[in-house]
Image (cartoon, rainbow, N blue to C red; front, side, top):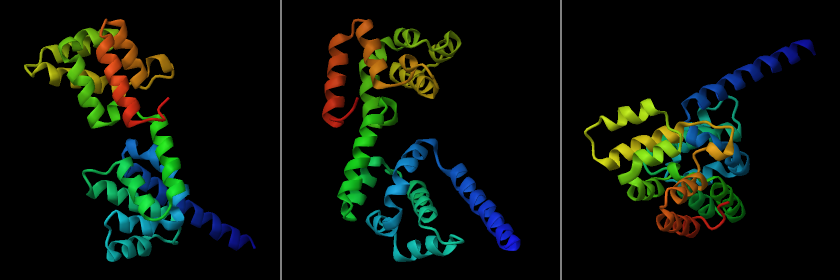
Length: 218
């Protein structure tokens, strides 16, 4: 019995190491999605992979390379490969694939979860819309968002157009990890900043577009 327990413990270490290695290769933007979606779709990961245009050979390769074969690990590996080989990999595309694999309930649940957590800077469409509206006053917005003055000075010295400078400022804001929700890089805080800087109508338009795209957003 002791030998069996030792083997089980050794296997667990191998499995944990495998998962750790996988996670190191996964972009942070995909980690939160994985935490929510993997337990939901693991039982039908291969059907979803088919909808994401994986070939049978690719699916078999994933299944063969997981030792021991476990559906959650297969699902994680599939999502990783999808992210690596697809420039347009997004939550929306994954949700559509889940629906096509006849898992409408999971797809709807995931869609609501994504909408609740959506961040204006994680979506290129929304980032472009924010930049377009604040580019001419990007430094003022940056000061309001409490971007460090040294960072703002470095950006200001660039010869790039104001739109590029604005995007650089927003990227710094996005990387901020704030425990205080009032300082975190969310669409609500950007809306508040724009209103406080007398950009009320652009802020309202941004909010309208957000609510239209993400009806369940908080």
